[in-house]
Amino acid sequence: MEHNWIAILDFGSQYSQLIARRIREQHVYSELIRFDTAAEELKKRKPSGIVLSGGPSSVFDENAPHCDPALFELGVPVLGICYGMQLTCKLMGGTVKPGQEREYGHANIDVADNSSIFTGLPSELKVWMSHGDQIEKMPDGFKTLASTGTCPVAAMVNEERRVINLQFHPEVVHTPRGTDMLRHFLFETCGCTADWEMAQFIRESVKSIREMVGTDHVICGLSGGVDSSVVAALLQRAIGKQLHCIFVDNGVCRYGEARQVEETFGKALGVDLKVVDASDRFLSQLEGVIDPEVKRKTIGKIFIDVFSDEARKLGEAKYLAQGTLYPDVIESFSPIGGPSDTIKTHHNVGGLPKDLKFELIEPLRELFKDEVRALGRELGLADYVIDRQPFPGPGLAVRIIGEVTPERVAVLQQADLRIQEEMEKLPNYKQIWQSFGVLLPIQTVGVMGDSRTYENVIALRVVESLDAMTADWSHVPYETLAKISTRVINEVRGVNRVCYDISSKPPATIEWE
Image (cartoon, rainbow, N blue to C red; front, side):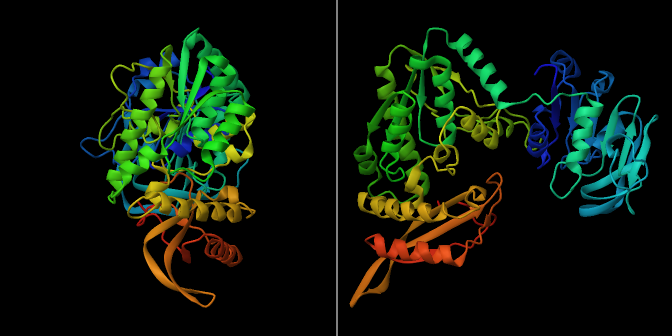
């Protein structure tokens, strides 16, 4: 990978991660790095090409983020996108001016020169623009490739130095031929080979894990979710009996979760798995708790205590494995708000006692979620594990509005079971980000048979999303909604009404708490 990868300098664009994903979809490894990474550091790592991302800043801003100008002297191909184009122009001796008209959204570009990144493409293309500034005078050695009615230089190239600049975003779906442009940059300009494959990732990971761990032992907190399951399967392949997994049943898991984890990992994969039933401990501490943040903190603290007790029993363990993903890592160094190295810990084991001094193993920290699923399939995990939807760390506790009691947990578990069974029948189920029930803190009047009832309400939440940053409510067929409502009301004792949440994010959130 060292000689076949693309460095993406992140200037804070909302699409920066998307650039990395689009490149990896072409089986070329890409990595988001700090916008101010020194050219000397880049030289050591030998990227095949460099991408300068877009960003919200203007090159005229007092504290506008700048890259090291020396990177243009490395002899490595550079692709500047939007802000990256304007910055390239400024650093290489051209001039940028504020545009008289800001272009944002769909636009048509006229391709004046079908060479370079436009090779084989039509002379008119639909693209996605997002800029206020534009090129006034190109640096020496550049020529115009495309323009719009309001932007004379929508694309330019210096063929000798292999520097290409686009005033639009090729990485978004709103630029239909954007993938063709990226492929040209990767394979024609940079000379990359398509060797970023999960089979290769497994081989390299197994080798590095074995070298790192040696004869020591590793503890993994197994939740049953996709990330921790794939971590466990990868470590099992690498170190076998040196891996020890702990599953903590907190009493607010999905129905049958503990049994399913035990059957999948303990029996089928032969993982050394300890299932700890701490449900009574969790539920007793949640008694009377209504505030969502207090729920989360209570569950988090008890989990750490239970996990720590079990970890101490495995005194020989030196390492702790966690399912940190690439978005968790790269979310930190955007120039917006200043660089930092913060790593999200929502699904990770943080805050362990000082006597448990583990070294971390994070074998998925280079991967996006879709790559983690592909890795799981390559490792032989079953579809029902790989295709699981994201599940909140505090479990059903944040889907029970109000107090969490054993009785209310049982109601939601049974309702959610039926929701999942019906949703999984939909042909587009894998395109749905999350589908779940929420138990509301109200009761409503109903009629069952000849009797009047006063029972619980379940809100059904189904959303479509790519990254959970934004989400749209899903237009589930009426037949499916009717089936879910009928089954939940008829089969789950204590529910007499089902409602459908038609709120998008923003302004709502995906979860209710």
